[in-house]
Image (cartoon, rainbow, N blue to C red; front, side, top):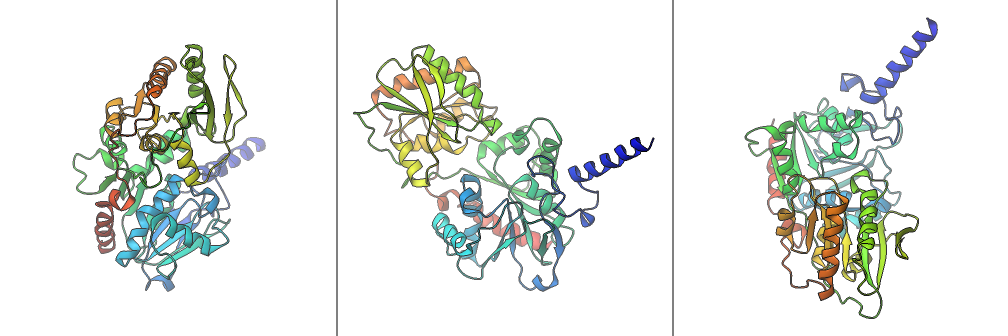
Length: 428
């Protein structure tokens, strides 16, 4: 009997760590992290009201981290969406909630300027590290929380108990429950879409998915201006058509991310092997390269091999795509993801997968250089073979590309919407 009681007590403690107690005001400290990868509901700081901040109201942007070495497309998009508010007189507090703040604070401020073109050197930008165990998320009464990832949405929901706002802002960059199997994490991520928030959605296709599937607040017949979507920008000064070499082998690039299940690594590798077996690469000489994550070399059959490229800086990556011929990039999500868009902007050909509202027609409307097929080995291998054959004629340099060429263009409607939303939330 005693052993059963001990087991029950351990089960209660585990449940507390998974979902936290019912009252966010009494939530456990950040040191009791989510089992596994640490991305659970109670990971992160505990919200606390700090009266000394009441006279300095800010937009409190809850970042997963503020580490330069991890500033990839998602974190940089957070900066693109929020930094323009500085030029309109808003004050921002960027908070590293689960990963560290870069020790060189000036380097982060410089990065914000490089990425967004906005000066972040003054007091309008405050950088806070609240990622260590036991940290608190200090908030003034007039602060407006801004969530950027589903665990930070749980933090933002808890923050509503210590600020005057009754809603938070939420940058939704993907259907994040799909990052996991049906599980506690899936349920917790899905729950964020029903929270009291107003959403900025990265890509119209993602918003269409949320609406058509009637997910959370997006299922309302009339959103009444509570959500806005934007098409992501692809910098046409960086992702440009370049001369493909005629001396060396032609290049196929595979966006390979085996640690990210939604990127369908195993499926992509099977597609490459089938396309090789079907003779798709018999014309000319081809090099097969993997980017995204380090992987060991992979045999493809017929004496061909896939080898990984090391991590590249942003402009080097753009130049690499610009001198490649075909990209295979998969993601089981309604979001098109960035690599297919970036490759198409360079004039290369892309093979990717369809998913719900992300139809072949919807992607071809962005660029005819994007070829989508059902996420099946046969359908994708056929599409890849056709793209390789079409690449014989050279890159589609003059193909139309229907996405914004700069972030100010992409956010033309979003930044004014954010200003109105901040005013409304503070007024509530």
